[in-house]
Length: 305
Image (cartoon, rainbow, N blue to C red):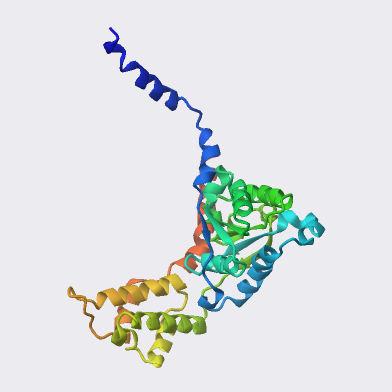
């Protein structure tokens, strides 16, 4: 009967959808990549002066060059114009790249290195630059998780060199590049910048500013520490990244709060207790993480053979 066959059409439609080739996503996925206007100014970042100089040279100035013969003259080095920014997690890599883009009034296309291997991010960046008439920074994060993304970056630089659009690329890594990249894979990166853990002066400056921001929420709490105590706290946070120090202050703030939202007076010993519970890990992970992983991999291979 005709009524008995009503279920056939939807079932055939579901079957057809299931049989669509998986590669179709490769054409659709790039439209899902998010492009945002860069807004983070360099004035908000502490220290890292060498990295700021390199980013100005690799990102800000090229993105500002409108209708220039610059790229036509230096076409031979087009495939070496990416910048690799490495450093411990929480050391400010993303903020640095975004600040360099903001200085050129550029937009930022964010994607993970794993995505860079699968999707046509370069086409998305070029079309965005064309439609908006604004430069675009491609920010590929977590290169240590997908080193093969260096091939995609090099191909993109080649495409950009043949386009009138202003597009540059920065990649970040939270591991020492030599521990996961072969020398040939570093070819696209004309600039390789490593961010060290903050110095004592940088830690103190960061803590003073962070506590000043807390003062806007709770003036007595944020201003309770004298400068000498902040000096001591900066010494105690040696090898901590900015993100790790932020987390320590966050935990101390929350620990001192009661159910009614009021906070107990804070002193240096409150921070010392949280520091004992929250040791720094990012710097050690940067220095050892992928070296140990490689050693483990080689060991497994040897045992198999």
